[in-house]
Length: 112
Image 1 (cartoon, rainbow, N blue to C red):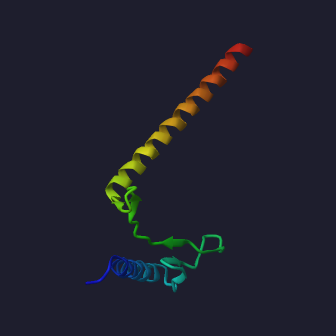
Image 2: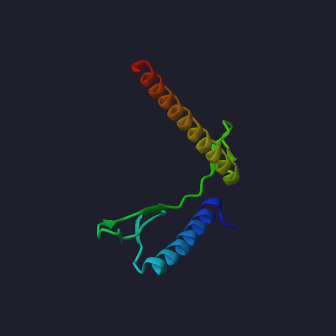
């Protein structure tokens, strides 16, 4: 039976292979390896500038539990937390924008 590290490395390699094949097919380029679990795509933007988007594939273990082990990473929970944080930040921006507009309106009224 393989150990966890070997299983993770095999899975990471398989995922990178699928991503690499899809990107090479789509962009008609050769994807380049730039690090462990990292690839880059040599592409050109609409103005002819060379760009190298980088993609990293990692398999997180989770967070330490304080007893020498890990609390396993939960992708669904991480996604939900990210969406909630994104929504919260959008609400904060909307409130700040509304406050600025209200402040501008108050300054305008004071001048009149």
